[in-house]
Length: 202
Image 1 (cartoon, rainbow, N blue to C red):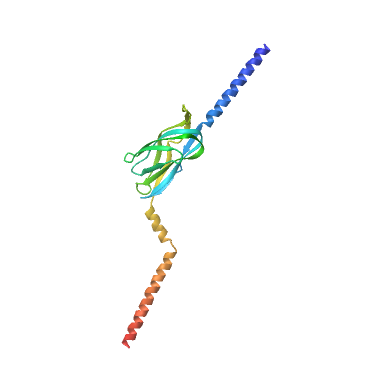
Image 2 (cartoon, rainbow, N blue to C red):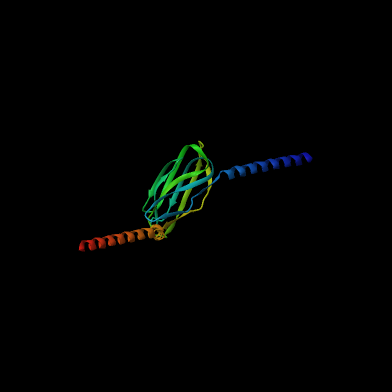
């Protein structure tokens, strides 16, 4: 009876170790992608990074993004580590993007660099959204890498560059000095003009 009991304990412990190990392995294979919020002045362009964290053996991926084309546009997408193939619909505001690398990537890094262009009026905003996302390992038979992300990846806000420039100029301490110098020069010219005019009369 004791032998059967010992055998049961041994099998149970073995199953618990295997289960714990599988949970640890699976948890290490869950990655996170995120992007900081973007503030961009009217009529301008700005790069922002899409980051990936704690990835192991990433070989390829596909990401679909969407946005409000009345607020911003995506002009260009680059990657330092992957060969990428983006299809951008500027009028409808979405991109279908795939990327791959021969050698698997590990760790945390900038997955993509995205160039945004401000289209909308000041104080308008929209979310850059993820509509679909898939990551695969670089194995001969790729495995899916689980991914955590917020569907509303980042908030993009248009700021008013014109009003900012006006505020900067009005608060510039050198403006007062420039005005004083102009008044002084005009005053000198008036004095000289009156002096030479009076001299001519004599």
